[in-house]
Length: 68
Image (cartoon, rainbow, N blue to C red):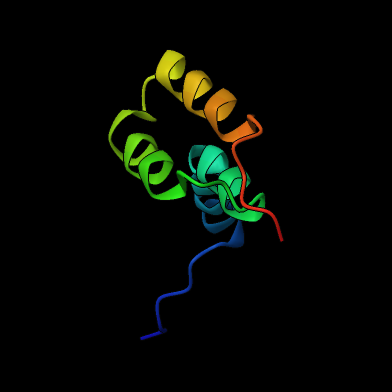
């Protein structure tokens, strides 16, 4: 019996979907946003709906960032 081999297409689709879903948090994280934890929580619980996801992305893109 051969071992379980998963095709790379479903894995890449799942990875792409996760990256797209958490895009607002990733933007906030890499911009060092002051409210990145709040953005993560909002993204986690409200991100599956398109309109709140867009608002969270706009929130992540605003200028409320920590200076480096």
